[in-house]
Amino acid sequence: MKVAVLVKQVPRTDKIKIDKESGTLIRKGVESILNPYCEYGLDLAVSLKKKYGIIEEITAFTMGPPGAELVLRRSIALGADKGVLLSDKAFSGADCWATAYTLSCGLKTMGNPKLIICGKQAIDGDTAQVPGEISEISGMPVLPYVLDILELTEEKIVVVSEFENGTVTLETSLPAVVTVGSGSNIRRIPSVNDVLKAYESEIVVLDKTKAGCNDTDIGLKGSPTRVVKIEPAFSKGDCEMFDDGNFNEGFEKIKVFLMENNDEEN
Amino acid sequence: MSEMNRGIVAVCETDGNEKLKNVSFEIISEGKRLADITGEKVTAVVMAEKKPELSDIYACGADEIVFVRKVSSLLYDIESESWLASKVIEKIKPSVVLFGATDYGRILAPKVAAICRCGITADCTSFEINENKKLVQIRPALGGNILAHIISPHTMPQMASVRPSVLKKMKTEKEVTGHFVEVSFDIPENRKKVKELKRESFEANDDDKIENGRIIVAAGSGVTSRETLQLMNNFAKLIGGVSGCSRKLVESGWMPHSKQVGQSGKTVSPDIYIAIGISGASQHLAGMKTSGKIIAVNNDADADIFSVADIGFVMDGNLWLKEMMKFLENRQNNG
Ligand SMILES: Cc1cc2nc3c(=O)[nH]c(=O)nc-3n(C[C@H](O)[C@H](O)[C@H](O)COP(=O)(O)OP(=O)(O)OC[C@H]3O[C@@H](n4cnc5c(N)ncnc54)[C@H](O)[C@@H]3O)c2cc1C
Ligand SMILES: Cc1cc2nc3c(=O)[nH]c(=O)nc-3n(C[C@H](O)[C@H](O)[C@H](O)COP(=O)(O)OP(=O)(O)OC[C@H]3O[C@@H](n4cnc5c(N)ncnc54)[C@H](O)[C@@H]3O)c2cc1C
Image (cartoon, rainbow over all chains, first blue to last red; front, side):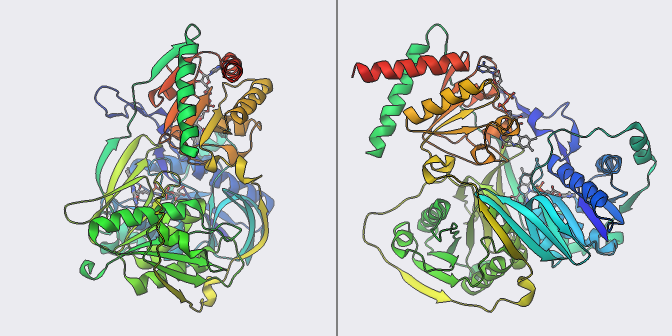
């Protein structure tokens, strides 16, 4: 069977700082990486391929500008067999729905993979909405927040999914979409050979025509939502500081908070 | 298109014991606040095996309750409930639909949105109504570094999920009631493809859940010994709080994932949040920034956690805990 892993290129959001004076984002020098949750998904696909003989091919898909090709090469270095880049000026400004639609079109051109693995969420847009929309648009069930895959055959899959209050073991027929919410936090380092192979691999590039997209369903035009304003998240910036010398003064303040809290409860 | 859609729908979620989750009351209350501005009515949609306790739902501002009796026994029946919700929405034709952004809500909502072919704004922390009567949906993004204002200019309904514990549950003490309808639909076969084989809960008891804590004391990797962690747990108990942690302590196996605060853990908004040895990475801040009072203890004066704190202590976490316990005990003894 064919497996698709959807990978997204994202900025390292943990390195983004806010300029305290101007209140703007400092994105300069912030590197682009493969979204960590997508990397967990890729790791899962690679381990499945090793474990079950039935996976013929893992294809990494991304929608993005031409430079997003880099995350496909990284995916190949980490064990994907090939990469597909959905790239077209007309895709820009896509919200979750238009992104999900475009990716679904791309998946169709690959002869409909049986298993579509997504990250739980991308750390830039942070919405976690794309996989659910892909599952609807492609008419497949979705199994979210997968920790482990217990069984995989040509017909079905059994997974353990983690929700905030516990885990559930779920079974469904294929094709299906799964999302991956955790994995090893140690980023794998591919061998030199794998990196070289990845740089020599051919990346399939699909524009809107090759992907078979409706003009009205892609990019900004196809997007039901609009970002109308962006502001830096507030920071209070007026923290009262204490140290080894005067902590008791600080404790007095905490005591007041604790007392206020008790009053509210009673 | 848009002229026809009216009303605000809150899609509620029940827990394993068929009780409505807190976040459901929060979205009903927020729906009521918005409805008072736009002059619409609020409908709470409850999909559950048993009829819910109605009075609490009305007391938070619902004018109407639509109850859809669940037939499957799946705890998270994503496929059929997304379809059911879309059917109810098709009937009501509301202008706004709100979901709780729990793990379940975050996968249910995009499916409903895709069926209705409308927009979905995830994890909102506040809402406004703009001059064109559109819903402005405000949400954090980029690991909590920014707030984005989002609208759905051309499509209906305007759909959003709302972070738990951020908006307030507003309950009137007055005896209120409203309209109640029970509806049922035959779920199509292709919505029954998922089976639940096993269910395991890892919540100990209600008192220990961080999402219920009005005071949370959280440890980061600056808590470097088990002894300090134990001290922190004792301190939390002493002040009537619950303990939480950063992701690093989950990774090291010192704390369970159910205690993790942040982007890949839980969002909390207690009255008091005390962070000990936490650097304040944006992914952590994303889960606790809206807390009432934030107190931070860190031996590095430049730690980012201080940028969101009200009171900061530049000192060793272990020493701070010992001194703080001493201080509180003295207070108790001296009345
Ligand atoms: C500040 C800001 C806020 C936004 N808020 C919203 C909003 O509330 N609603 C909305 O509809 N749009 C929103 N958008 C647009 C949205 O971020 C983009 O549509 C984005 O392409 C997909 O969303 P995400 O990054 O949140 O992905 P998520 O849904 O979080 O991604 C989950 C998984 O889907 C797959 N995936 C997602 N995007 C791609 C891709 N391009 N290529 C390959 N795989 C992918 C990956 O496997 C990924 O791990 C926002 C954009 C910005 C800048
Ligand atoms: C996709 C993604 C999702 C994530 N999700 C989350 C999440 O949900 N929650 C989360 O917390 N993190 C999350 N993270 C990780 C996050 O980026 C940080 O790595 C993490 O929050 C750091 O934890 P920390 O503050 O405990 O550790 P550190 O960053 O190592 O900070 C330790 C702090 O302790 C201080 N310290 C050291 N010794 C002492 C002492 N003796 N006394 C007092 N202070 C001391 C140090 O000065 C330092 O500031 C996520 C990351 C990614 C990429």
